[in-house]
Length: 340
Picture 1 (tube, rainbow, N blue to C red):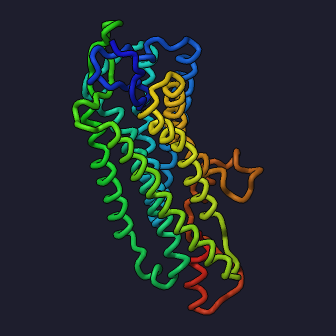
Picture 2 (cartoon, rainbow, N blue to C red):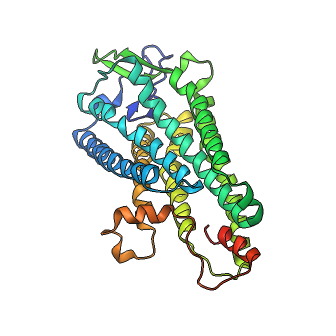
Picture 3 (spheres, rainbow, N blue to C red):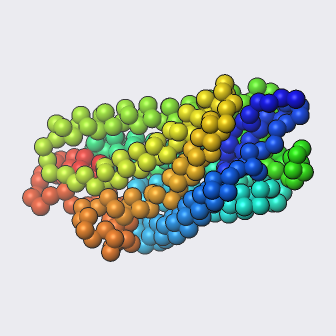
């Protein structure tokens, strides 16, 4: 009888390698009352804030504002976050009842949505970063080529790629009867795909974290160099929003990737507990973005009283960059280099 600890924790459900015989009982079924209550409270808070906040963003960006490169990307981010938050009640009920009662489809779908959200979010942030970089480095070219059609194609491709590379995680999800508790549980069975454990973890790390941060870092380097040489008056509001979104994403997801890598070699209880906490932290990212849109404005004292207007203001990438008149060529450069 193996005494190895279970495998990856995703979507608040403990995952196991059921190629071992016999499998061990899921720790979520034996978690302490304090731990379970804390998880439930965290996920309920994320659900309420995420649904309300992202619905507000979708309403403003989708129906109240002119379509721009920024609004399309932020609208897609909000849709991705809302979809994920909408699936949290299934996981909340799973923790409360300590069994899975929603069938095989939702077992697969709830986890699938989490990683589609992860990939689509970071891919959209890459699109925003590249767009800002092009606007600063090549302002005239950017004015002529940054069209809504092209950004919508880029966003569509980001979603398609996110769905495709999330499919392996969908395949290995399964519902089985726990050998000790004799209740249905939603688990991951890496034996359904050969050599899938390491492959899935590395795939998520490379395409969902490392590669995007390299691209974003390069874009930021170009932006910073260009802005240091540009003496024109400029607004840093869009740059602050973008920076906050990217920093929040990486802070939220970094612990998850660290623990999944660690868990491949060290199947210890403390690793599993850290993995559970890291999933909650990653989930928190989906409810924070609307508040970042609202709070990154210039008037800090008024942010709590002007939530809706702050969200709309954060999306505005066509703001005034100065009061003095410039030549036509300077206007083109200023328009695209000041809204970083």
